[in-house]
Image (cartoon, one colour):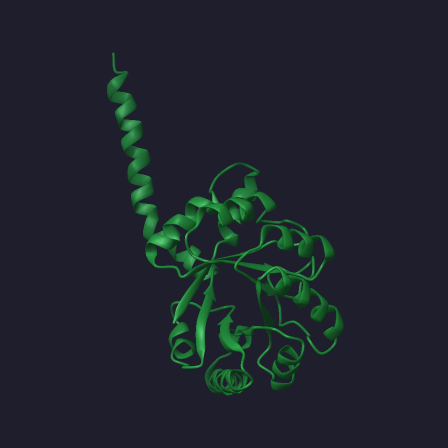
Length: 243
């Protein structure tokens, strides 16, 4: 199974200070070294984290495929057509949301989404649709020419007890259904170190996209060394300038 690492929150930290660090490109190189099979970034309408420059630099720098999460807004689509990522994942987007809150309603916007898919595929960009685990949305995705789907795992991630088990079974059922429809099956949203394995064990799912949990853990796994390096620099300066 492949792992796509979402680096949006590297840029979120940077944008809190409107500075130049941390750099998503530098983070992407480290993610590659850690075994990431692709790098995912979401260029949002409000540009709250990832910017066009980040996407361009990532496309030029990384060795693994670039997956651009994007809405179907005209300016975002035009940018994607020019930058030509390996794949584009179409997602719903609302300005006031903290993070993507649900899957794309393919049935309601079939014609518009179909036109976007057609434009992207004409540029040899693979297209996935981020949808809730519902058979009718999977069928609609197949009908309008998507190459694959990314199953929204948020309900599973947020559920507990028997409800969690039901959501997992629904994901399994929909993954099987999508594969039979000829769609490549990805999954993501809300997956963590504690809940990922049941989803990862589903044979039909070939790729997971995880961001927040990985970036959160990296703060702890790397913080000790980061503090040590800063302390060494400070001590070195004190020694060199002692008088």
